[in-house]
Image 1 (cartoon, helix red, strand yellow):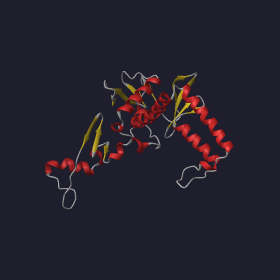
Image 2: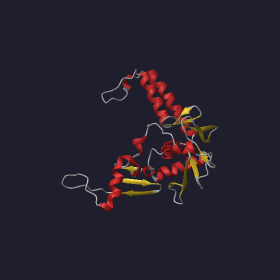
Image 3: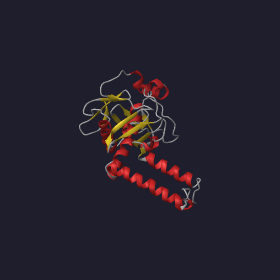
Image 4: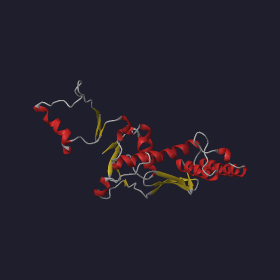
Length: 242
C-alpha cells in the first residue's frame, strides 16, 4: 500500500492473520488504528493499493474532474486555468501558432489548422477507414489492400503535407518533443485536479511540463498555480506542491 501525503510518499506493508487472513485484534492502545479502518473521517487520504494506480496510461482518456482548488481560489498571480474549452498557444512556428486545446478528457494540438501528434494520427486513421468503408484484415486492422490507386495517391498527398508540417515545426525531433508536451500537460491537469497521484510522473514528464508552462507564459522559476493548485519546481527540476 502506498500513501501520498502532500510532497511525501511512503510505502506501507500490512500483514493480516497468517492462519485465517482475518483482521487481527487490536490492543487497547492501538484503538486509533482500528477506528481509522471503520471511521471514514479518520481514514488516510490519497492511499493507493495497486502499482497500476501509478501508471499514467491508466488515466488517458478519462474525463477531467473539476478542481476543488479552482472553485475556491481567487485569481492568483503567475497562474493558468487549463479547463475544458481552454485554448493556449505554445508559441509561433513558421508564421503560425502551435495551439493546445483542452477537451473534456484529452488534449488536442494544432499548428494553424493542421492537427499534430495523436490528433493527426486519429484524423488519418478515420480518413482511411472511410475510404475502405471500415473493412479490416484478419488481425482487425484497417485493410489497406482495399484502397484504390486513386485513394493511395490521395493519401500520399496528405502524408506529404504532414511531412511539410513536421519540417515547418523544426523537424522530427522538435515535432515529437512538442507533441509530448501535450501529453505532459494532460498529466499536469489531472494532478492539479486531484485525480492522479503526482508520484506517477517521471522526471521526463516534469521537464516537459516545465517547458510547456514556460511556453504558456508561466514563470516556473517561482511558485505558480494551475487550476487553483499551487506548485513549484525544486532546484533539481521536480514538480512539487507549494
